[in-house]
Length: 314
Image (tube, rainbow, N blue to C red; front, side, top):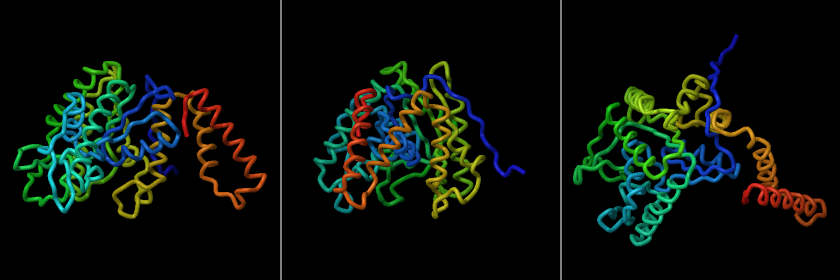
C-alpha cells in the first residue's frame, strides 16, 4: 500500500544553469531555496529588502527598484531606539538613520541592476493578508511592532492579487523582456491569521497566479505549496512550531525544484561543489598532519578547476 501521493512534475524550458543570474524575492521560503542555490554556488541575489510576504509589498519594492526611488528621511521612522522603513524587513533596521538610508538606496540600485540583467526571477508569495498604515493609507511590508491600532488588516481579493502580479510582470518585462518569472506559494502556514483565514489567503494567491502565468510570456508556476500539502502531508515534515517546513521538507521540495528547473548539465558540477563544500567544512583532528595538507592541496586544485571552467568562487 502506498501512503504517499508523489507529484509528477515535468521539466520546464529556459532552464537554470551556471550561466544563469537568479533573483529571489519574497517570503522566508524564498530564503530556503536561495540558501540551496547559494550552497551550490549559483549566481543568486536574494531579498535585498529582507523577507516580504504579500504581493503588494513585493510589487512596491520592484516598482521602486525599477523607478530607482531615492529614500529620504520621510520614508523612515524611529521606534524603540531604532530606525525602520515600512517597505523593508526589520533586518535592515538600524540605530543610525543615515546607515539605514544608505542601505535602502544601495539595495534599490542593486535590485535595479539585477532585475535588468537576470535570467530568472523567483517570487515566493506567503500571504494575501496585508496591513494598511492608516496615517498614509499605504500598504506596508513589515509593521515593525508599531501598535496594531495604526493599521487596517485586509485580505486582498483574487482580483487585487491579479492586478498586483500583472503590474509587477509588466514592469519587469519593460526593462528585461526575456526574463523568466517563476511564481510559487510558500508552504509556511500563517496560522497567526487563523486556520480558515490562512487557507483562504493561500487560495487567493494560487488562484491569482494561475490567472497570470503564461509560458509564452515566460511566466511560470512552481508548486511548493502543493508538494508540502499533498505530497509530504505529514506533521513530521514541520519544525517544532508546526508552521515552518523542516530541513527534510525543504530538501525534498528543493529536489523537486532541481528536477523541474535545473539543467541536467549542472548535475556533475553540483556534485563537485558539494564535495568541496563538505571538504571546506571538515574539521581535522590534526591540522598540521601531512595527510591533511595533501587533502587541502587536493581541495584547492578542485576549486581552481571550477573557478577556471565555470567562474565559480568559494
